Amino acid sequence: GSIHDKDGIYTLGLTVPPYTMSGTAVTTFLAALNAGSGFAGHTDWRLPNLTELESIRDLGTVGPAVSAVFNTGCGAGSGGNPGCTVLTCSCTVPGSYWSSSTYAGPPDLAWEVLFGDGTVDSEFKDTESFVRAVRGGS
Image: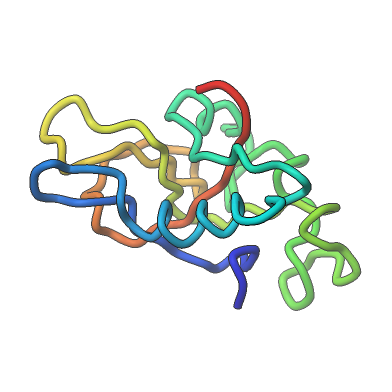
């Protein structure tokens, strides 16, 4: 039920001009991570670009298609470690995750990585999808 819920889904932005990243991924998810003293003491959380998001894929596995370090302990009832916290575990569900990269064609689309099988696709920015946060340079 919090921003750390692995099942939380968010929109990326507007599908009409000016096509800004103003959806709930920014206004709810990132805003909460960066509020006050921030998450884990940091206030520079952002959405990864497509290259960054693709870098955690492992095309040798499916459901989710990520390296093991990005799927450790998804919590009670999901085969994970029920004793872990958001600071000690990482969880990736086999769904679509937003990148911050706008599609080169129609600007109302952005790139997503589908971690069920590791494929990449574009989707309308007002569609609800999963998100991960990264810090540092873009």
